[in-house]
Image 1 (cartoon, chains in turn purple, brown):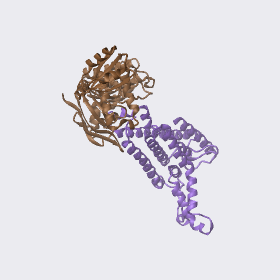
Image 2: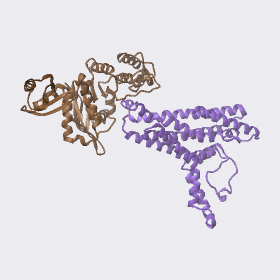
Image 3: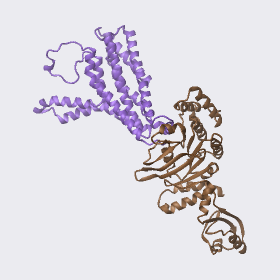
Amino acid sequence: MFALLLLASTASLAGAVSTLREAESGEGLFLELFTTSSSYIYSFATFLAFLGPLAGIALGFDAINNERNMGTLNRLAAQPIYRDSIINAKFLAAAAAEGVMVLTLGLYVSGMGILLLGVHPTVEEVLRVAAFLVLTWVYMAFWLALSILFSVVCRHTATAALSVLAIWLFLTLFMSLVAGGLANFLFPTEGIQGFSNMMANYEAELALNRISPYYLFVEAAVTILNPSVRAVGIITTSQLSGAIDSSLTFGQSLLLIWPHLVVMVALAMAAFACAYVVFMRQEIRA
Amino acid sequence: MEAILETRGLTKRYGDVTAVDHLDLTVFSGEVFGLLGPNGAGKTTTTLMLLGLTEPTAGTAVIDGHNCTRQALAVKQMVGYLPDNVGFYPDMTGRENLLFTGRLNSLSEEECAARAARLLERVGMTAAADRKAGTYSRGMRQRLGVADVLMKDPRVIIMDEPTLGIDPEGVRELMELIRKLSTEDGRTILISSHQLYQIQQICDRVGIFVRGRLVACGAVEELGRQLESEGRYILELRAEALKPLKELLEVIPGVEEITESVEGLRIVSSRDVRREVTARVAAAGGTVLQLRQSGGDLDEIYRRYFEKEGEAHDMDSHPSEGGRSAFRLPWKKRAQ
């Protein structure tokens, strides 16, 4: 999994470098390493948005049920440790591994970018990248917690893996379709009424999209990595009037995505809490 | 003798099914206690409750003054549990698996290594200790399981079906090992099993467990006497005679029931009829090949308790025949 991510990062890095070489140098070139894609390959941030969940799922889907199938769970539970230590350890160990994974990838892309392009980051850019990596880590932790939940609920590892993968596919690929369709159904934009519905339509679609952690992550990642993104969601012209046309500072960007971060942390914690409760109430027997 | 393990009114229900029904059990320090019963009698549930892995619906279990539900950690510190079909991490060697258990019991690294080496030697696994546990046979896993249980140096050991799926030689070795754990180390051992014959040899006392209830408890001989005092004598007879034996013997006063089977006749009577039986067979020109008074033997004891229970519950209407025949298997083997 790590090798796959490394490969993906290298590919995206190559794409970004080749694109950026042609571009004239400007401000925030370093950050563009993470977000720029060439015509044939995704950017690093997009790759993480797709593959981060997979890494989380890979580490968590067999956490509990594999122990059960091997017959080691009751042996483990018979040792003088609290039962929740087992599931806590499963989560913390995998989360730590993901932390290391994310950090390594981030440093690798930054380092290679510096070497290949000769750009040097400012303090603010380093902070932005750090925030992005933390965001990625939380995002992966959510998928990890979700897959641990399924590993507690499902007896077979294959069932657990397939269930989480199904959820991942749905939220990543189809949620936007569902959100768009549902918003159009609730607030049709055709006809006379359409004009008054447009705002509501867009807001409904956005709200539905934001159910998906994938959308939350992408939105937040774009905001934190791109200082010129000034708002998430819709802004009216009246709101824009009088605004100074400049990039946001790190603090302001962070403020903008703070709700996203909080929601993702909450999602991860909720998923883990469910797994925890189910596990604690479950029978320990082979 | 001092009681080390005590349960009072221990009950576990799963919905409508009562797995364990008001179990009152006392195990004394240093003894080997056999918990016997057919599959699904609630033996495993009982052991899980003793370790605090399952919460009882009602009642309490206490091991050495610690409540098994509330102070599970203190209990698990001194109670070793060998589950049936014990598993090990297949990508770790046997020794590494033991070291892992040692660390979970907060032993120092040196202590872990020394103890693991000593225990591997004791269960005869030294040669295979550095092979991956995934390559072990079932018997080897079971022996490693015993070593694993001993890593924490427990005062009480609970074993769930330790002899299941092991060849006779392996069973003999295992039984010897278990017996030694009691006699040499002074550990208290609770074995749950349905394999009567094997357990009979090493248990100080047995408890017979049917449908969640303890129907009898005591030393094997004691249970035998208990049954005899109920006034039932059982004879097993093999004889050759010209006339059908059944007709011949039915007329003896006191004989209540005669059943025929491949092994011979089984005569149930309210008094000792051995003399009359031999006399009648001889008078009819037959020869007694074998006459055995049964009882005092665990199979017999078990069978009778089980039959009594079965009648009370109208056993045959329940689909637990599997458990019943599994039980009879060792008895049939012995009779051959």
